Length: 163
Image 1 (cartoon, rainbow, N blue to C red):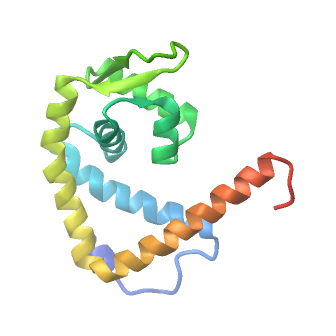
Image 2: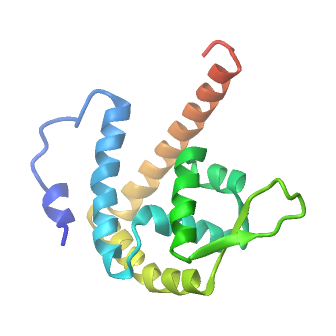
């Protein structure tokens, strides 16, 4: 199993990278591996767990809701939903507007999420114990700000406005 303590307590040699994007991607890959390792007994990866948890929270979810909720692009989301549907953990839900694709959990999906939740909590606990809840709250606040700035700049850029 992945040893978070050895990574987080390894001697620092300064920042990981001067590039914000590269640093975030490096950290994301390592943390994703930790969660995937913890979730392995459930048969889910953390990306799948996140999608199932979002659908469970929303009851039924359209692609647009999931894109916004998970900050994921349509192509990646569509591919992931297709695999989850193929595995029988989600199914299409009827929507009053027939043009809107909505998804909901199947009984198998609810069971998978039930098995995965305590494993996810185990991964979350490992990270929070090493990082500290106060440090995570500060990081979460800063990352939320970065997310809002990036979304705004991207939106302005698509609209042809000066970024």
